[in-house]
Length: 487
Image 1 (cartoon, one colour):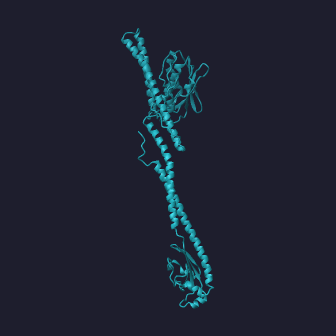
Image 2 (cartoon, rainbow, N blue to C red):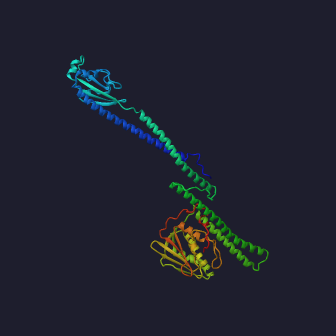
Image 3 (spheres, helix red, strand yellow):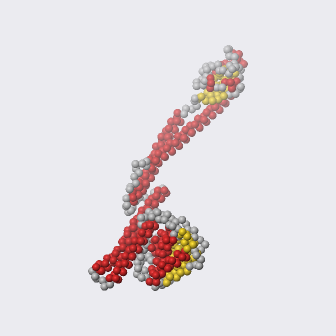
């Protein structure tokens, strides 16, 4: 099914919104923070200026003639400077300039000789106590106060201009952020669209990978592109291997079926000299088909998620003796000798006896099939594991085949007696070993004449068997990978 994502929020919109929001919030926070700090600095500087001015004027008023002071006692004062008379109770006798009110100043504080500064609205003020000269009290009829308050005010700079500047900066920043985000996200969207098209082609079964573009600059997108390319390559290889596997299985089935059909028709037409011999041939070919089907069933069971093991304590010596005894008739028919070397002490391991017998039996059957004269079975033990070695003196395994010996289906080759297997026996060994936590290794050739040795490592404390094969993504698993020359 194709991947549809255009009906959802695109990554381009998300990135654009994120960059835009980040830019706007950054400018707003920076601008408003700057305005706040600037206003605080302006208030502090204005208060300092007013305090210095008030201190100087207070000294001046105590020394000048009353004619100089009288203008400052007027209702309007002089500029932002007023001299306000106070009663003994600390009540101002004249009106205060807007926006100050009588409650804006703690007049009782001035009677103690302290000054007070503050801010009301956009006006910074300072009230400074002044003791007037005696000439002012003499010539100011009706004034019985003994203290005056020198009131200085000064407006703060208007914030309209800075606010307009911040708003303009936000707008300009938003425009720049949108332009940058569009330019950057256009590249991201183009790359993602390309990757989506490739994925959709894979999902629809097209593995030709004709989509081509430059490698993404971003590390994450480049890694995703490489992963999709690797996936396409793996699926293509799996498809090719599956086709080869189907052809191989078809050939393995067709060959014995052709032989069976030919002999059956010959028997019907009474064209064979020995019907008994023809019947034996049909029986052998039928057994070959049966072995192939049994191997395919075994592989299918190994891949099933509900495949279970039944481990229990096993006497490995007795199991190997039973295995050798069961294989001896086949070895004798091929004029082979099975040599065994088992320690006197019984070695107990914890495994599934039926599956272990199947694993060792496949290896021993394979050795008997290709041995020239002798097969050996050796049991050793170490502190951590039991080691079983199954060796033969056959021609050996080609080096090109050894790497995939227990991981792929191998093209079956005739044994010493001309018998041909399914090519799946060693693959089943590898799958069983993985499930049971067993290590299997093969070494070949052993000398100039050839020979093969398979080593099976059975830990005394086996690891937990795997519940699933790692190649579950392929419906035919590793069995679909053919080899050119197996044993």
